[in-house]
Image (cartoon, rainbow over all chains, first blue to last red; front, side, top):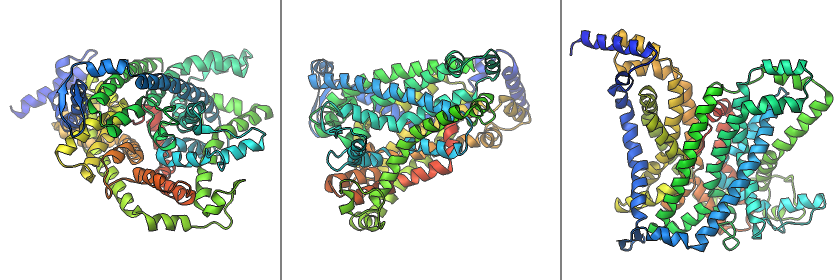
Length: 312
Length: 288
């Protein structure tokens, strides 16, 4: 290949890039794959290999350090009749519903507030965002101390306003709402940031007209802002759903799935099966089910992202 | 991709300047929203600066008098904190560095080749729970005799850093106009030169954002080190978790350790808050 031909090639490529419908041959240039190759190779070995291997393991009766035998779909049938698994599944959905909806409401509210102008906005926004970045294990330790029924600061604060002491994570009925509270504390800022990104792209004209027409603040929110930020709220909703399904650190530190199994969610059940009971084949089946849920939600997320691009 | 800095917004100006009532509502809301964060972090600090008698006093002692650094001394004396800190630096540093080295070109390749399916794969990798990678990788490291080594941790942390860096870089490279690179190619530049001297400098903000987020999520990761870390190779989060089981009511040292673990991340958050806000409101993704 001479220089001339590669120059022609380049001109061709430039032309195809600027034309309205670039042909597949040019957009799928092999050169680009050279850039992606090392990354793709690493992703294949540390990410895709585990996926496939997990699928394979899920079809086996497999203990760490022990023998493994092919059992077909037996692990999946066992899951379907394992009440501990089914209960953890129901618990996870309940936890996820709360830990998704509450941050959405608070996060949209926070975004509306931080979208305004006020003194120290940058500083206060940084403080507001800090919980999201803080190491979950470290924060969970502090929460554990705050939840202490006799000596914890939370019961003291409640007593100041006349509310009787709570058992927080030490009672099966209150453990999930309490863990939800920690999760809300951690992740409301993420919702805020996503919605704030949406608010930043809003046009100003509708507000000017609405103001002239005498619309109230609530009407402007309900009929102008809300429809426009809805795609972003939906994105936040899906991300929160996925993240809540995966909650682990907080539970591992604060309640260890207890009392009893009252806070054993899907991910914690998975951890116990794999690394406490060493039922690797069985745990792999849980991963596969988990994975199916995550893929479905990720595709939904992708669809919503596309949609939000069109609207802005 | 721009940071959602909205100080120019008409809407913001209208409402903020409207009335005393509106302003009161705004500040009440802000106080309500920000106070939980302040409460937890200040309580963490307070616990870490008090002796154990004050820490388990009821009603609680809020302001340490006098504040003491004994808990911090204690943590360093009784634990190999420097070792754990160094482990965290090695694991997170290694994973972020490798993540950037392979992730930035990969993001470029995927963005330019418009490889949407690969992008979806990256997104799914990003969303999958970290725990689910752990079983096969654990078995693999057993075979390779790597369980308990720093290497095993660096490799598993790539599961966190690569997807986030690639994902963010795809977004940034898509924002670099193809025409600029086409012009360079016409002038006889190679694909590498066009990447190195045109696309890469223009996407530099993305590298900063991706690097910072990868650092934070890798630093905060806990489960990999719990399962794969050895006595001398565990990272800070799992080291602190281990202290919990030994010192049930010794709150001062625990709070001091917790603060030390999360301090680097909070510092980065404060310094780079603009980049973080840009990255998260654009990508809107976190780790598993």
